Image (cartoon, rainbow, N blue to C red; front, side, top):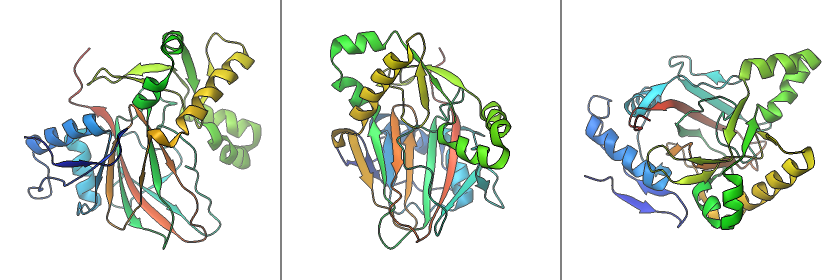
Amino acid sequence: MKLSCTRLTPALGATATLPPLENGDITEEAADMVHSALTEHSVLVFPDAGLDARRMVRLGEALGTLGARHHSYTTHPDFEDVVVLTWGGEAKPDAAEWHSDMTYRRQPPFASILKAVEVPPVGGDTLWASMFAVHDALDPGLRRDLEQLEAVHDMGAFRTGAYRQGGDEGISEALTRAGTAVHPVIAHHPVSGRPYVNVSESLTRFVIGLSAPESARILTYLFDLINRPDFHVRVKWEAGTVVLWDNRGTQHYAVADYLPHRRVMHRVAVTTDTRTPVG
């Protein structure tokens, strides 16, 4: 059986109906269907999922193991695996940059589940970009060159908060806590095997083995390419909408156009994919 999906754009994204939950839990068969649809579409939008915080955790656990919570956000008072993202007033959102979640870790989360709890009267959309489509748009010769390269990822603009709290030492301590990782510029999805571009303007700092100008030129070219709307899907949130996305092969951008209104989201990060083939 397959999950019934309606494609949103040629590049990525589909609306879907979450299979019924039994006593708040998702069956293994239903989880297999969700995982298969996620591999195919990268981003699944569930307009009427009916998921509370507990059910979000159960869905995450049906897909893999949890635990990759962000180093700087608060968590739900009853469910420590649910991160609460609240922005509004003078609190400027920090996700208005193209990024894949937590790539400064050796093993970034495989997927994320995001629910809109409170939405502004207008604005506050989120965009996702297909890094598979970006890869396929590259000149074949450039693709071959990029396949030989690796790049450094770190915490990016979170340095600002670290500096304000602890100065120079605060930045060093925050970088140590968050971690730094080197990933291939062209990665391959562990389930489908599809190649994708694995750098982001938010968290990728430097291409290993190149001079600073060479690294900057390559990364700037890729960042500009990722900005093309050909590779995007845009989700307009309503309270209760849930989006599940594969962090491998996608990036997202939370549009920060709604201040001073509030936007409150719940997020569960799934660290490992229990259905990923071994090796």
